[in-house]
Structures are given as structure tokens and as C-alpha cells.
Length: 234
Image 1 (cartoon, helix red, strand yellow):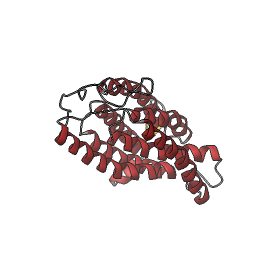
Image 2: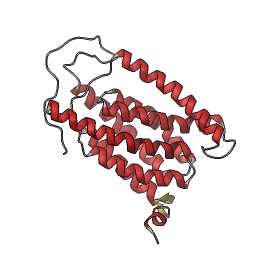
Image 3: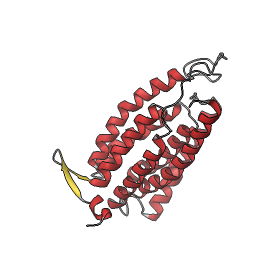
């Protein structure tokens, strides 16, 4: 049996049928979130490998949007890895900050327009779920794709909003994964939800001492760059 065939085999996980590609890919996805929380450069190569496995899982159940998402994540993670390496070389650490209101407005606009545009493409090509799939399913598949791109971008830019984007992706990802019989993905999305809440709190605390404030606070110019400890990873 080849490695690809083995990854498309299923095993029983507490009575649920789970693909090996889905299982291993999501284990690496969990590791990626934990490493991102620690602002470790290792998060990026781990994410790339996990996305390769999840790409195989998505193709196996005909999730076109989710499969395209993994391809973009692989490309984006390569860029993000280079961005974080350059940041650490220049600043001695991986500093994080809140996005400006202008940056937030652009992200929201891309979020809305991108989701509907990509859903129209998936619907027109019958690339999501099955021919004639209802719009709500296609929109959910499209949002997972667009939201993941935005999450990768905001993570690479080191915005605290990175965690809020992932939160929105998780809220759609859990029911979508379960509906597509990727049960382990659904379980992992639920774990992501808890980790994302921890990430919001941690990065928000590290963002103090910057010029751009939290959406809930007025902008105040403070001295210092916040956390100055070197980031973990190589």
C-alpha cells in the first residue's frame, strides 16, 4: 500500500470513522496554533506539512473550497515564515500589535467581497460539495477559504486580529466539517476555539506599549515596544 493510499484509509476514533490524512493534518494544525501562541518560527513549517495532509483529506471528500484553501495556506505560510524571520532579525523578537482602523476596514471589506465572489466561483463550477449544493453550504466553504487567507495574512503581519479571524473561521468550520464527515476536523475546530481565546488574551497583552490601540480602547502613544523577549524557535 502506498503512502497516499494509506492516508486515505479510515480508522475508528471513539467510534467515528476518521481519515488518517485528516487526523495527522489536524494534529499538526493544533501544534501550529500552539507554536503561533508562543510566536515561534517553527509554526510555519509545521503548518505547511499539516496543510499538505489536509489537502489530501479535502480532495478525498470533494471539498473544493477547503482544498484550495490548503494550497493557499502552503504558499502563504512560506511568505509568513520569511516575514517573521526578517522581523526577528531586525527587531530581536516577534512583536505583535493591533491593526489600525483603516487596516481593519480593508480586512472586513475583503472578508465580505471575497467570500461572495469565491462562493459564486465554486457554485458556477460545481466545485463545492456536489452539483446543485445549496448556497449556504457553498458560502460556508468559501468563507473557510477566504477567512483562512486573511488569517494567514494577519498572522504574518503580526496583528492581534489574527485570532479573531480564526475565531470566525472556527465557528463555521465545526458544523461544516461534521456535515462533510470529517469528524476529527470538527473536534479539532472545537479545540481551536479554546486556543484562539487564549491567543487573543496573550497577544493583546503583548501589544501594550504601541501607538495603535485595541478596538475597545482609545489610541494612546506609549513609550516602548512591549515584549522584548526573544521569540521561541529557529
